[in-house]
Each structure stands twice: as C-alpha cells, then as structure tokens.
Length: 196
Image 1 (tube, one colour):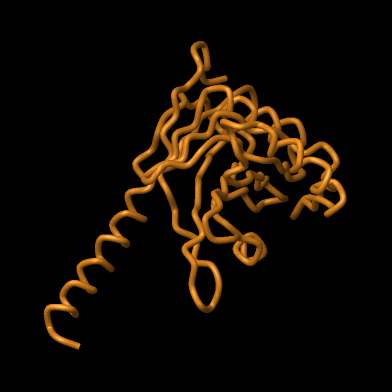
Image 2: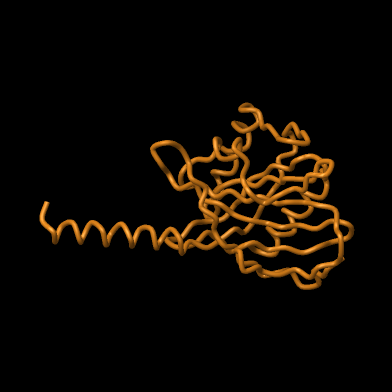
C-alpha cells in the first residue's frame, strides 16, 4: 500500500470518528414529558418504551416517546415479550414520517444505590448498531433543581419529589460487541416546566 493511500485511509478513519462524535440528539418537549411521566409512574421499577422520530446524517430528532404498557417491570430490569413487540411494530411502520429510532428505559434508585444514567452490562449486550438508547436515571430529590442541558451531554432537573438525569447512547459496532458512545442531548424544554 502506498503512503498516499495509507494517509487517505487514515484521514477517512478520523473523519468517520469525528462524524460519530458530532452526532447529537434533539428531544422535543412532548418526548421529554413522555419520558418523565413514564419513568415517574413506575418509580422503583423500570420503564420501557420506543423513541419515534427520524435520523439525519449528524443528528437524531426525537418527536415522540411512548411507554410499553405490557412490559414486565422489575426493580432491576424490564422485559417486553416478542409477541407484544410483533403487535406494535407493524402499526408503527405505517407512520410515514416517523420511525422507531431506538428505545428508552429508566434506572431507579434501589436501597442506598442511586439510579445512574449509564448503560449496564445487560443494556450493552442488548444494543444494536444504528439504534439510539436513552436512559433516564430517577432518584428521590435532595433539593429543587431547574431543568438544564449539562456540560456532560445529559439533561437534568427535578419535578415534585423526583430528580431526573437523562442520557443518550449510540451503539458503536465492534467485533467484540457494542461499545456505547455517549451522545449529547439538546432539548426545547416545554413552557412552564419548572423545578418542583
């Protein structure tokens, strides 16, 4: 291989890496409210749902999120049966302008352990390349906190007696499995959403 080809291949590798790192998530106010309500409703158990929107070259636009009501919820996990999935996905495929771009679930506090907005090993094992994964950490509120976009790429805030931190991950494909790539979230917070 000539040095020019090697340089070119190296440059393309850096560009691809840079493109993945610059991927962003834009979350609508409606989607945010659905994530919060779904997670709060089953607090102390995990929520699970689909993210609906579309993907552009450098971003995901999440228009809607909806909870899966038939999921079996536990303190440390949530399961959707294949039968239920087969019933829902054909209906969603009929929406021409929106598609399933990933899913969301919550991590809640358990005893002294806080819910964290990072994927567990089980989460990583279930990730598929090209899909988006949003994790909502839900903990009991220590103090009121206004809603904001954080420097670490998450969004967070409190409502009533709960504090939420929301993060997003993409599955960066690898021979030995998925490598979760944290992706920054930007949100147009709904008018009137204030710390509780």
